Length: 227
Image (cartoon, rainbow, N blue to C red; front, side, top):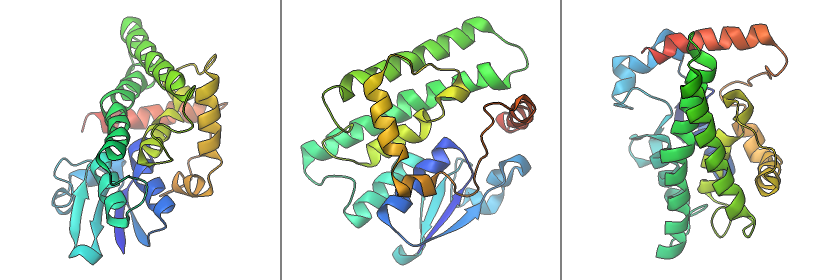
């Protein structure tokens, strides 16, 4: 049994989607970021950086894993799925996980901060991060022109990148003119396990046409950013 400590964020979905795809039994523990639960002493013993997601593997003597990418690799290796065991195949997957962790995640995260959360709209900062996100999207689109998946087969690399890239509208990033990226994203969205995973720990309603909901979400996010 896996204890999953998470919240409804792209990094949180990376964990829940991976667990769902691997069909592992798990128990969800919602971490209320708005109440700063992630900084409480008991949680810091599991996740020293005070961030979600984190897991505790009961079958492995209550072994704790923090950091979403490390968590995904651990679970893939534990089950022998979604991560090749040969050196080259494994490297291909990990390269794209690192791409997400060093590029897609941080750049989309900063785009969110300046485009959605900061009360002051600093247009040069907004442009910088949205443009870099678009560049990274183009990298993926170019790669997918000749590849069905990011690595040789469906893997945790696809999960990691999709969980972030699916939120492109919130970051204010255009997906227009990227047909291979769209094909891949549509294929990912159609996977039942991924659809279940993004509803963990709760289903996040669409805010596409609800300006009041967008403003409330952004205001709450401003408070969390300062912790």
